[in-house]
Length: 106
Image (cartoon, rainbow, N blue to C red; front, side, top):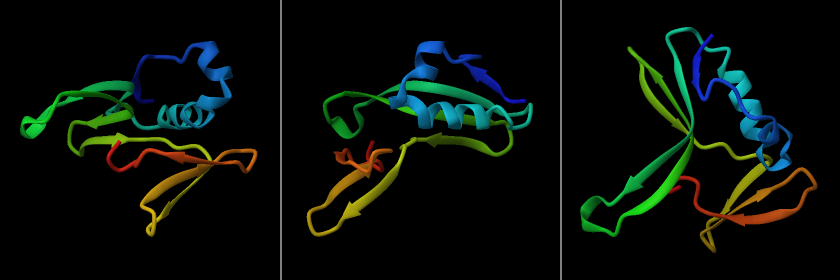
């Protein structure tokens, strides 16, 4: 079983519908082998190339001593992109469409 930080998710987060997809992914990542380390909700700061520093958060960072590091952003429901307007959107469990930030840049 993979090591995770935190080792468990708090009950309030498990019961919050907004985090349902992240909870499912967390539980599946536990099934990775012992050599994997999984970090949940990792804060980062970006100020590269002289740009103003901005804060962000990644849903998961998965580390393996031989295979490297994978950053994973989780989106629940469907996701789409409209090239003509350059807008990203998601569809939630009630089929409602929401405009979202660019997940690649996020």
